[in-house]
Amino acid sequence: MTADRLVGLPPVIARDTRLVVLGSFPGVASLAARQYYAHPRNQFWPLLSALWSVDLSALPYARRLAVLRTRGLGLWDVYASCRREGSLDSAIADAQPNDLASLRRRAPRLRAVAHNGGESARFMRATAALGVPVVRLPSTSPANASWSFERKLAAWRAAFDAYGV
Image (cartoon, rainbow, N blue to C red; front, side, top):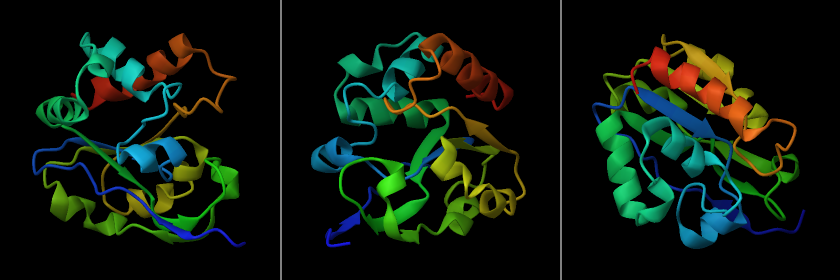
């Protein structure tokens, strides 16, 4: 593979984070914007908006992150860096994982970890070693067209309700 090494985004985790959502690795739009879930068709921000009755998509990115922190939600990815052409998880190569073991130190009040999609869920064994419940959520990616928004919302709502986020 000839692609340059890509470096992911820093974690959005506070000491009082209760639930961390782990994606796989930022897509092209997210890397360009230096923002989690920046692709306009990704359903992450619309899902959270529906869950919390706050139009997060209308807020500046820094304000969105402030709302997440206030609600006890953290964001990160399982991969720190990789080589990849495009945005598909299936194109990820030569990936270096993030230090997921550090989550307990970064978020001492951590109650659970949620994996956003299948590629992230490959790390469920590593996150289960943290001693908190681990759930796999349906991917918010536009590539996950087999799940309707309503079905995704129900799955995400169950996880968020279970961990008080």
